[in-house]
Image (cartoon, rainbow, N blue to C red):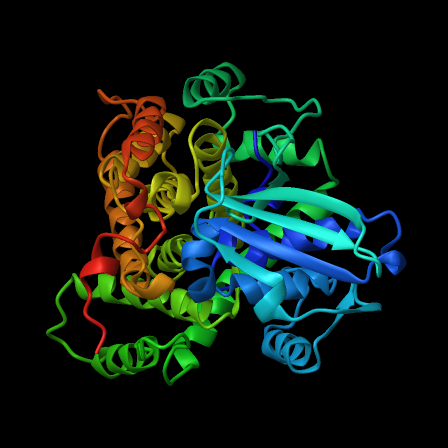
Length: 453
């Protein structure tokens, strides 16, 4: 089981695995130093996918921030470039925020394209030395996707709930069985598990903060104009699309499908914010951060009877589904392709929407299964290593698929031939078989065939 506090992290873009994770790893390395005042120099090596697409994802900047004591959930996005530029210009890094050391990012952050990644394709190594060059600490970390990080030698179940909770489940069969036996909805079981770990006020406040951050990301994305950073010269589209939809609002000849244009707008607005390094929620990753907010906003704005309490149930239900994928497969594009990011987000969103609209547990499980079944095999092939093409539009389509899946499931009785557990196992196996050039390396797919002018 994975807590909503771990699955839904508030942080900055553009990537949970390549930005948020490395920042947390660097921060964790510094925090564990026995005496950082003895440290005179730090070097960092990036391996695997972090090397191949790290520059496009701002991994080097994230490492600088983490070493300087910054955390993804608290840093002001407007200060990211200020801090990184200060280190680059002066050659001095405030280790842990208060101990200046010499640090030249061009020399001390190494993009190692051939180094080993035995545990996970997102691997980075830190070495701290004293003034005489003697090594004081050396650690290798893995960024597992969704902002989850672990030292290479630590157990893989980091983030899993290990304390006793009222409704423990490890797969969808357990989830449905326990729900039937207890008479509880999936949202109710997740809520009771969360409040067994933290007080009710804390859980409710964090849930509302997650929802508010998602809605704020949509609003900021719809207001922003200009070109996204990174060199592809991708123009922001959400602002103009929003203006067009508003101007069309009074038309009498609107087609019913135009509601889906609003859903696409919501998703694209969030992912444009993410691509620009803005504040978003890993849901379950940054690359897929627009799907759940878009579907949640669709529920709030277009579904009669929407309430804040039911929006919380949406999040709690999505937590259960996302936790199953995290525990039994992966949410890392570098490990299983985009099926593990946008696909999982769509599955979570479909389940959440179904729950908010009064579906049974069986219908919710069906909605989650349908959404993932039709993302199986989706590759992660970001052009230029940037979370822009095809990622921004891909979130819009993930949101629309989630709404369709929830609607189809609601019109059935919950019975279906392929179970959610089976589709999760299939996703894991598909990811294992997928060629590495389609797993966030930008060495294949659209990234290799797009001609940059």
